[in-house]
View 1 (tube, rainbow, N blue to C red):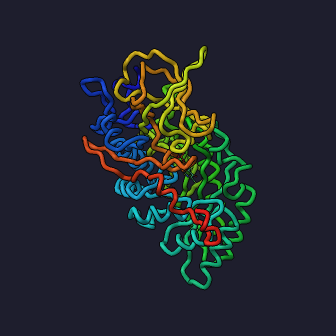
View 2 (view 1 turned 120 degrees about the horizontal axis):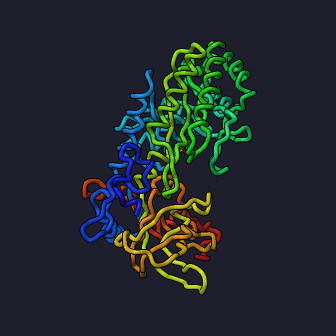
View 3 (view 1 turned 180 degrees about the horizontal axis):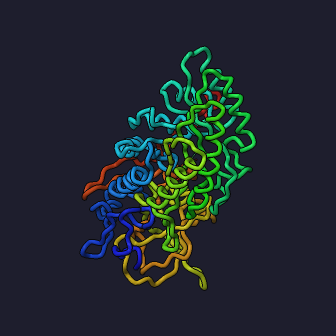
Length: 453
Ligand SMILES: *Cc1c(COP(=O)(O)O)cnc(C)c1O
């Protein structure tokens, strides 16, 4: 089976594997990650359970960090796009690996600060930042990526009579198409994010008149789960033109932020570029584009999210009921579903899954893996082939580290799962399991109606 053939691993670029670097089979053929047997973890912490493999996470961070150092001759900074999976511990781990972080809300910003990320390495994004979010960023000295004139208006009010100039980045829409799901495409003209290419000159002009604003960087993000290298190469050319224009008008632009977007391997047919090739391609494009325009090299910033955490994460479920309908694959139900992983119902995403204690046993049945939510669309995985299975078996779904916990909900008042980190035979909780009672906490019955309950 291809995913358990270690010879097929890419140890340098974890995003090219479906399973974490530490995945092993024990003597009985049961799956372990980070030296912990998965079925043990399920018993100890319950299911559904999110698991994060520290070694895979750190190896990925090192791959980005080292590739930037190796392939780019000027300054660089990788940022972790924390919307993929935001927590205090993840912030602290990526900070230790030399990353900065990008955040898109006050909540993510508070989490980054709580995880002790230096404010100088925090970037605030968003197409509709609130007054409070912008104030929080300014107070702590995080860099704001200005998405539109609404941002500028609020910032100018917040800055008021302050003498200090505020460093800002500008986000623009480069009008680049890439082949990915339309909900995660962000670089085309019709995108809701950033200034359009036709606005860039007038924005530069307008900002020259603002004594408090210092435009130090340009940003664009073209989409997510991208397997091609060309879109970023094209992007860099367009951004180099914008840097040239901005600098010629007197803006001290030193940062070029090319966003994130590198894809990962969810199923064996996925073939994303390696982190090394992705960085090398961009670094080379920046170098060539700047040389051609006689521009000094900017600091190169990139913002990977998915490719940093997806492969390090897996989710465990317990199998429950089954339904057999003649002439079609059986339904197998798990104890979670669209509340802990909304990607299949949102983007038609597909995954790889195995029985944790029998991953290599001969498959005998095609099943449809369904969640426990009251939606026929709550299908986690179709066309899944499994060995003989029974209620109580533990199932592992791979590559769930990104956009699972961070997009989770309490639909049907299902509590969110616990999260653990594994390393060298140790497992530690990093997020408590919610309890059904917790979900009552925010309910209020007005005094006028308090006789009702
Ligand atoms: C989502 C996002 C990213 C990260 O994208 P990935 O595909 O997860 O790498 C980076 N920058 C911005 C502005 C984003 O919105």
